[in-house]
Image 1 (cartoon, rainbow, N blue to C red):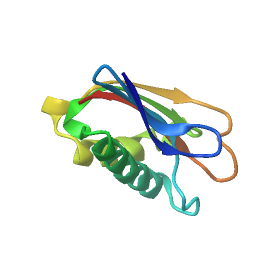
Image 2 (cartoon, rainbow, N blue to C red):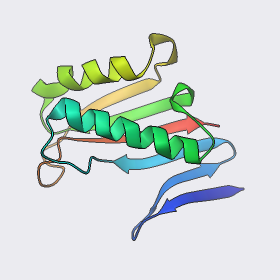
Image 3 (cartoon, helix red, strand yellow):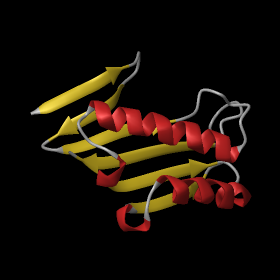
Length: 114
């Protein structure tokens, strides 16, 4: 059975199927923030989205992170390491991209289990 949560005009933010929770690309609302601030806001949103699907950050399986400036990756990594413990790190890829629109520096896509 497929459950869909948090509809937007173009997608559902969260889709759960057979115990696997997929969270679509998540960006920050406050684009004036630096990389660390944008990362913190996004991770808080992801925590909320996972909770609505009956999951949490300790159940992350896979994360793909898109960033516009690879030289800012250490700032993002510092926030990431504060958010999760090493025992719960999922598999992860960080991909440099040319543009995410306006002043968006980072977008995060996650998959977790319930």
